[in-house]
Length: 255
Image (cartoon, rainbow, N blue to C red; front, side):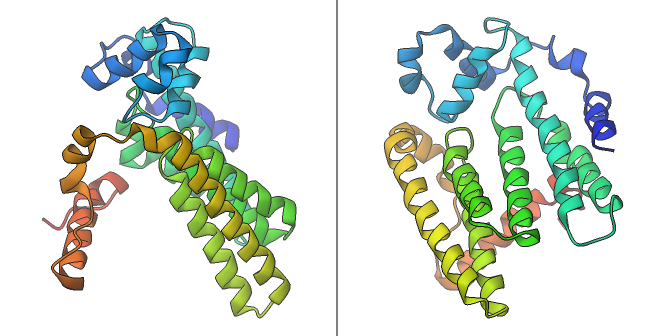
């Protein structure tokens, strides 16, 4: 079933179109970064994670549309990992895996994000972290906790969301252990959570923070969650974003 879902990625995406359609402006900037010396890469990437731009250098094409094979590869990986995530849940197998894999394969956001940006890597990292957290639940071990922390911190080199998803997963493990009053697991999960938060913060400060600049901050200001007036203002802001995102995850927009 996992192999069938992988083939499905190549069926539902117009691969020929992806590899022959000229880049739009943001894609062209990412593609051009592959032509510069590696030593200049940290100064050429801004809205794109450093690790994503580095991975592009392993693909043939020299700045051509063939570079879109990287987001396609992450789409395929996200779909397959989603199958194994569903398969790891304490629900009927293998149908749960087939449903979760199909959901990632066919969700509108994944169908339209096939351009030369890191969005499919964001999705893949999130699914991988969900899979790792599910594996911790299925068979608790310190090694599996370390794996969640490592992917959370290391994923920040390629994505922007791994920090949020990974830390949320570890918080969930702490809460689950508290509900079960399993104090050993509470301690181990808390140590993993704190350690992951520290390492992720260091990665952000040393690598990601340098890409912040006034132009990007100004551009994205209106996309941030509003901090006022009061809780109602924040709630209204979040509701507006959820309404806007609804079609991307397969729901009708109420507007």
